[in-house]
Length: 395
Image (cartoon, rainbow, N blue to C red; front, side, top):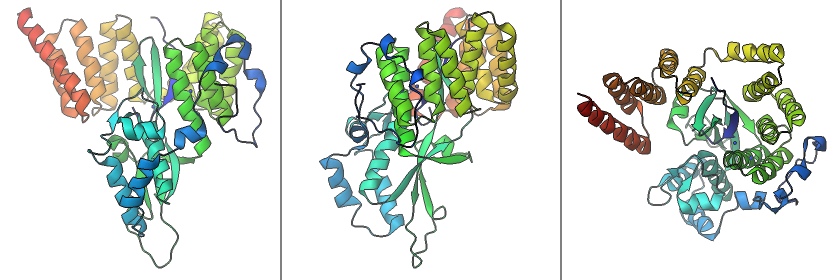
C-alpha cells in the first residue's frame, strides 16, 4: 500500500504555515537555530507577501463602529460579551460561511463571509479587544483528526477563545463561572476536551503554518517556505510548523535536513505523531527498516484507541483501491465512535466500490442522520440520490 505523507493544519476543527522583513513578530526571548533554514533552496521566497501581525489582527472603521454602537455602551461584562457574540453570529451581519481552506485576516473574515475557524477566532479576538473585553486564546486538545486533500492527509487542530470577567467584588456573574468560551464548533463545545492557554504569537504561527501547508499542497514551495519560516520565527516552540517544514524539505530532496527538522519538531512535542510518522516513512525509504519500525510501532500503540486513526487508515486503503480493507477499518472506527458521520460516509463509498449498493445507501442514510452541517448535508443528499439512481439501474 502506498503511504501518504501527513501535513498538520490548525484550523479550528475541521485539526498546515515572505518577505524577508520584520513584518511578523518574533518572541525576543527565544533564539531560533538558523541552521534549520535553507533560504538558498527557495530563492523566490522573499517575494511572497506574508501578512503582518498588524494586518492579521487589524479591524477597520466599520468593525469599530459596530462595536461602538452595539457593544461598548453596555458596562456589565456578561451582557457586553453576549451582545458582541450576537453581533458575531448574526446571519445578516456575517453569515459565517465556513471554508476549511479560507485562511484570511480578521477584516476579510468579517466582510467576505468566508473563513475557516482559526480566522473566525482571530476576528472574534480582535473585536473582543476593541470591546475592551479580557480575551485569550485556547488550544483545545482534541483527538488526532485527519482530512484528505489529494495526495495529502491533513491533521487538524482546534482553537477557541475565553472571555474573562473583570475582577470586581461587587459583581457576581453566573454564566459558566466567571468565563465565557467562544467556539465555532458545536461538537467541541459538547465535549469536555482539555484546553491550554496559548499566546497570540502561537496563533500567529498557526495562521502562517496553515498558509504554508496549503501552499505545499498546491506545490508552491517558495510560498510554503516563506510561511513556514514565518511560523517558526513567530513561535519557535510551535512543533507543528517545524514538522511541516521537515516535510517541505523532504519534498525538495533535502533528506538530511528533513530528518533533523523532524527530530527537532519531536523534541518540542512528544505528541507530534505526524512528525514521527513522516520521519519513519523517510527512514524506511532509506532502508533503515528497524529504526523506522520502532517509531511506527510506538505511534500505533498510542493511536490504537483513536477512531480517527482507523478512519485515516481506511481512507488510505480506499485511496489505494483496497475497498475490502477500507470497509473493515471504517467498521473498526465506528465501533470506537458510532456518532461520527464521516465514518459512515467513508463506509458508504467503500461499499459502493464493492458494488454493495444497499449497504452503501444504509451507510449514507446514517451519515445524513448524524451530520449537523448544512453544506455537508447537501453533499450527502446528492450522494444518496446518486446511489438510489444507481440501484435502480443495477436491478
